[in-house]
Length: 181
Image (tube, rainbow, N blue to C red; front, side, top):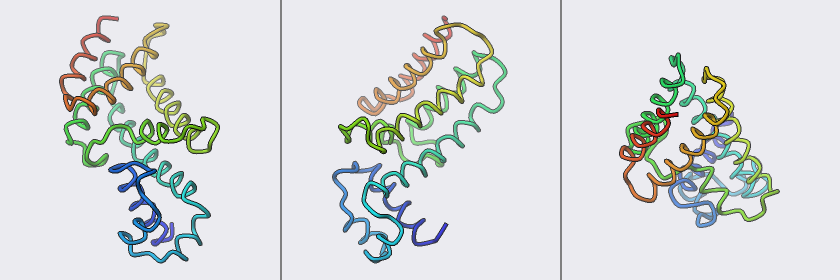
């Protein structure tokens, strides 16, 4: 990837994740990145295409991290424990690959776009589906509700941890509830 393009995407991702997409303008991205406006528009036709590039970068980072977290799991119980312990570490800012916890970038971004048919909303949905498929591949049982329960509780844990600031408390409760299934 071109270094200036990469700088624009990384800068945008950091700013969007910390502040929200709609509160960050192109001029702020240019100022912080030190990249010229002409260079930005030679790589991205609009702010929305830059948002999509930031979403893709975050997706790749998150999926790689999640695969690593679940790589050694051998049972459904291990998937549950590894997943929610890893999420707890992220909530407590102990996952350097994911940076400081500011909630889910995909939930936050999707909430800013009311058009569910937009490329941005669709990409956020695709990210959630890929995370779901990754978890499904690691599960060993065919319990009909287990995958749904894990995914719904994961999303709820992310949102609750962000709103309350009580990440580890949330994840330990999720582990207890899911272990009872």
